[in-house]
Structures are given as structure tokens and as C-alpha cells.
Image (cartoon, rainbow, N blue to C red; front, side, top):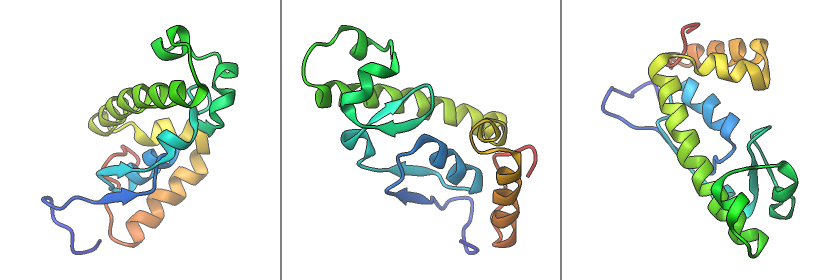
Length: 133
């Protein structure tokens, strides 16, 4: 990490939790992938991953949850693909606008964000996506 230059990319494997993705982005990660999108269903209210059977109980109004009949796992996979597409766009905007730390404070608290930025700084990672960094 300390050897990175502006042309290097940091890709995180196995990270599909939206809040954790934002934490890694705050610390300097550039891209993510995971099997979470096919194994569970993202609850858009809490940004947690739940069992696909429970997706209907989240009250999601996306086009797949509202209109698509069929097995819960298929609906959840389509719901998740749409969610991650939208969340990725929002995360890029937060990085551009330097508001990732503001977003994270809503989910993990200010103290944890400060600790994350401090830890990133200690190992030489710039808090490049935070006004607080």
C-alpha cells in the first residue's frame, strides 16, 4: 500500500456490504467484488444483506420487487444488481464530492469514521475521499 502511485488500483475481493464498501473507499480502495449479490438480498433501508425470502418484507419498491413474480432468489438477484448499480453511482458521487465520511457517519458513527481515517493515515493511505481527511 505504501508503494502505490496514482496509476495503481486497489481491488477488494469478497466485499459486498455497501457500508463496508464505503469504508474501504474512504481508505483508498478503488473497486470491489463479492458473491453477496447472489447469496442474499440487500435491504435498501438499512444497507444490510438479508435472506432473499425476506426481501418482500423490506418494502422495496424497485421495478423487480414491485413487478416481477417468481422465485425469491431470482427476484433478489435482479434487485441486488439494480441496487449495486445505483449504489456504485452514488458511491462515485460521494468520492467526487468528498462526502463518503458523511455517509458513513450515518451508519457507523463519527467516532468510527475518525478511527478509520486515523488508521489509514498511520499506514500511509490518504483519506482522499473525505473532507475530514
